Image (cartoon, rainbow, N blue to C red):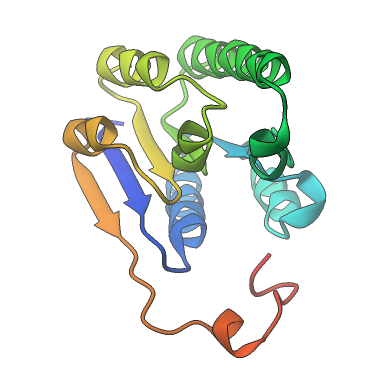
Length: 176
């Protein structure tokens, strides 16, 4: 990629991951090398993973369920999860750099930061020192101020109306 930027999709509305996956498909369609890292989501819960892998997108899922249990854990247990998160993030950065990816999508990274599962300082260091040709997209609610400041593009997805508020449950193939 000629010039890799940093994009952030945040806010309370639906569609942040969908937008990032659309970018991944577009990049792959142009012959770019793409890696999608999904924090806090499992492979079983995301209908797009098998298709992305068939397209040649590297997909890694990590931390399934951590966001929901972190607030209930003791301090020592939280610290162990955070250490695993830091180690995982370091491996992702190393692979993205070593294997010359053009696009790195960090899906739900903002939420992982919010819960303290990954270290904001380490993520910022990576973003500041990434290859100038690597495009990075971070999704999720609660985008930290320092990430927003660093980003080249920030889109806030605003919820105006949502079917969940009317009792409509998640729908397979539409919401996951």
